[in-house]
Length: 278
Image (cartoon, rainbow, N blue to C red; front, side, top):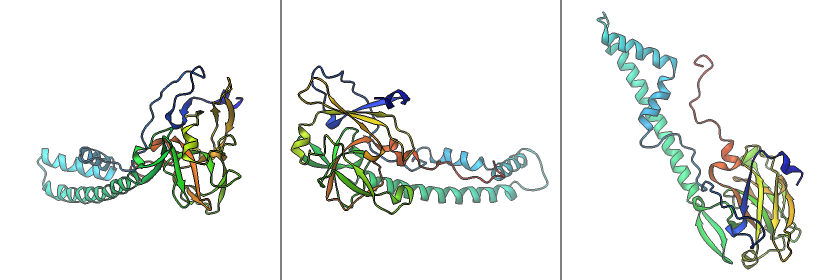
């Protein structure tokens, strides 16, 4: 409760996308992005204008373009071909290279977005594509599988409610890290159990810090007041990390797609420029 005063903005996630029981709290449906990851810079429609704009931002290319235009407009002793042909060659080769690299990014994105994910729905496990995963969905992750989005750990196959994770793809650390399930949900060990769970999570809006997370889970039972438990970074499983030495876990999607911490830490997609060009 004390941490909430420092939150800039919050979101409410309903586990399993189920409404809280009547009289518990106001149900406020919110729209979140799907779980698609987009690392490409171009589309089929914007490739030519966007690529040309980026290339002519380079001082050298812009300089030779001006020279070429001047030679076209003004009668000069040298032919415009002497400056226009090399410029056209450089621009064309660079565009082909960058187009091919972006095509590879599209291909990699499609492979990731179509990976199968096991979702717990109505007491059963169903398979769906990763891109169709929504905030609030409960997922089943098995050993050596990579997390499809940022998740709050609800229960594990281990009795103490812990699991081990490697985050080498995020921070380069290959050692196993220990994460903890919510104490009041770690006893939920079957798909049928999660069909009876009514709970919501209040947490901060997405931000890129891998080691910071503040939230709270409200679990509704027969009592008038829900059971509230704090959530921290030790409960948050990040997209790109891998489950290790744990048979399986159940977790709920909290940040998806381009709102995951991994996506927020992507380097700028703009072209690299030298200090002289800047």
